Length: 387
Image (cartoon, rainbow, N blue to C red):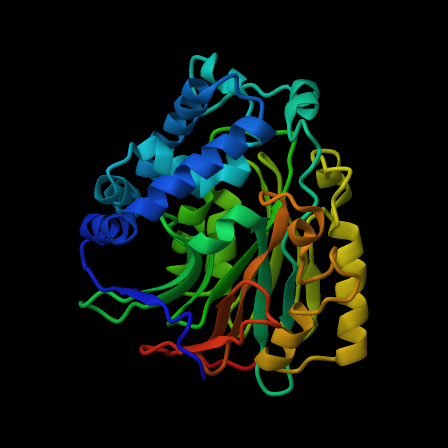
């Protein structure tokens, strides 16, 4: 076992104080990453300038207030602790969705129900067409325990900011371990109840103002079951597309979304499920804009082949599979930026894999072949259901 990526503990009971501690802990990193992601949003989105980007980001704050007062308080606390504006933390958290939100949302009388033009957005999203990467997520029924995990592929400049966090308030029995970035509420994770959630980005043409997606992930992780988390997702207003894998050891759901649509495309805890960064559902395909250079279809092919060849049955075997360099640099463990020389190109910045019976998490930054996993045990684990 290595402690090179041990999760940082936030044990504050008060969400606002927890956010402030987060912001204070990584103040310099949060400021730097917020600027990196703002620049990328301007490059890849449809925004005229930084002022317009910030204005669109601010529209998301009232929705977050209404969705979850505690998570809104935590996000605003991060902003105070890092001494940045709340909209900067929205940009940092919500970057992949913000790229898909058209500036026309600023023109409507009600930001909660913007009118979106698919044709306008399709011409302006990812205008440079150079976003080829994305995450690979896998669920396994396992030999004696179900396992859920994913790579986290992002712009390579995000890798230094990758962290693991443990949120374990001193009062009560809650605990969550998340893979995240400095300043981010959490991108994927598992709760002490045995509920885990992974996320794959989907590029949508019907972007709108919605709930900041890492806040949705945290809210889903606070649910009592996979079904409850699925239902929360299905009734939440989103900004853009993601594929969510939701599992609790008894049930599994894979849900594809665009900005305005949601479809359960995968079910069943006794079968293996894989997903990359394109839609399975034919209706949702009409609302997505997979970049021309995307490796999503190739990675799906590679992951499927690796699964058939390796038949992984536990968390460590899935770690090996998700660290594969077959097809390098456009491999499951992606090294596109290493091959092309663009530091902001997509690469695998880390991975997280959860054993849903034992409450054991394998997590790490960067290439899985170069960095061994850090093994994390949830202290308050009370899951352990086997389908």
